[in-house]
Length: 208
Image 1 (tube, one colour):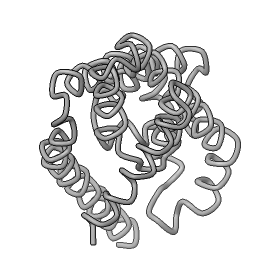
Image 2 (cartoon, helix red, strand yellow):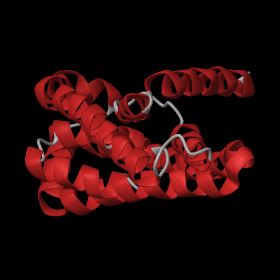
Image 3 (cartoon, rainbow, N blue to C red):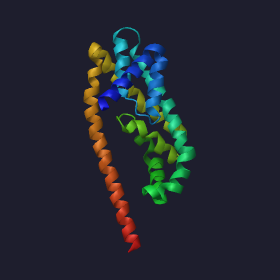
Image 4 (tube, helix red, strand yellow):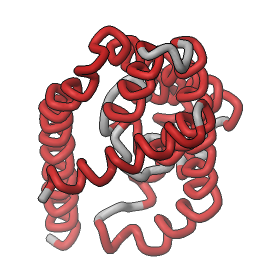
């Protein structure tokens, strides 16, 4: 089932980039950065393959990808900024998110937001979703944009470069990335479980 979904997504990505060129690269990476898990390990290596074919330049696809990341991230950021905080404050208790948690997130992004955004943009899975919490925490917008681009460009460049070097075998990169995605997914799951257990214990102590 998962393989079939990836195959469909890959066909959509290849169609979009082949049709729209650099704009297609930007569009696909914008979708990926707007909290929609369109696999960047297909988008950028395929773009690199087209560099190998002489249709694109490596710098061109890297810049297009990074610009797309910024565009998609802006959308997710403003969704979080405008609607995320009120919703979190109103309904957060139903998913164990308290105002104290939101204050912690605010302070974290004030102190470490630049580093968090930069590093997150270099990591699969995490990079897709970092913009929403940055918006909810109301991180400085221009710093958010700057570090989103600075983290996205090397990520896009590396994947496109690998795709160029792999040539006709560009699509083999996804196999390795899926393993990395699994590791990060497990880490995130462990974090969620810890978060839930911590809040359940806090509520028990408060009731006692």
